[in-house]
Length: 417
Image (tube, rainbow, N blue to C red):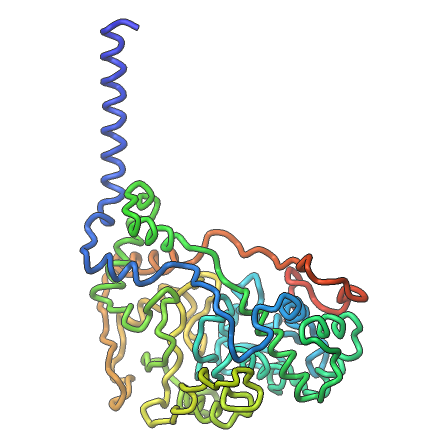
């Protein structure tokens, strides 16, 4: 190669490098402008996923046989009064284990939106009103609820005892065949279903990859995160003060608040929210203060022990996680907001007169521009993974039972509505 051609090649290489640097600079401009305080707050929303911790109140938490049994029971419609409704009827895997409806519909139409189940194991309270303090109790309730599955302890025990494969898997999970009393078998069924639900952890999202890239100071990797989402993130952390309630890796503080949403229920009812949930929780024999808690120390029941309903709790509802929002529409406790844009606009135009005078007044109308609404929606969408969760395979470590479960619906089957 001649000296002239060599110089020409170097100039072309230098120009290409300069253009690449300029492109990276433009795409990553917002990332480099985050302040040290903002970077610290971004870091606090990870890492994801969170480390595995077993539920001390559920002795089969993390048990492979119980997970497989719970997986089968979750799709089994025989637990319902009419044999047509399963847990999966309202918790569709294709919809983030939600149902896409404003309010849930099992044997009857309910008054609240069906919560998704992804990452449910990291919650402290369960249900929009926090009426349960553990996942297995929350898994038991819809089986018995007359408007959802309308089942019973007797029906559940009968299904378990009369299906040889399920009875075999139960024996693998609990160390003995299902010869216990009907109420005990019902609780164990719920604990198996809870053990499976604990495995429903969503993969890392674009935000998680951006957060991790910032933490390791990998400027090249941050370029992949959309600039609009970065602007939305800055709004989320700053003027919006969204992280006050939507904190940590789960993007929720796990508690309850008044968001200015109506709590009237047609035709003439009122949804008391958290106040009613606390009353139900304390009266529930399946709470962590009761005999079915497998944690003999009862250290996991401290929060329940000191819980008391207060007037300010009326009309408060759970602060939901912001992960996986695009697949769990519609939104809010009553499913009244159809899109993420509707949700952001609600907080932008918040009617403060709807907030309780005696509650904690955290919220103020954000008064966002249309462009800011677009940016905040872009950020919220970035909290959802771009890949699907893998389908559960039967663990090779489990010994074979009599037969596969012919009556249980498989996870990729669509439940009848």
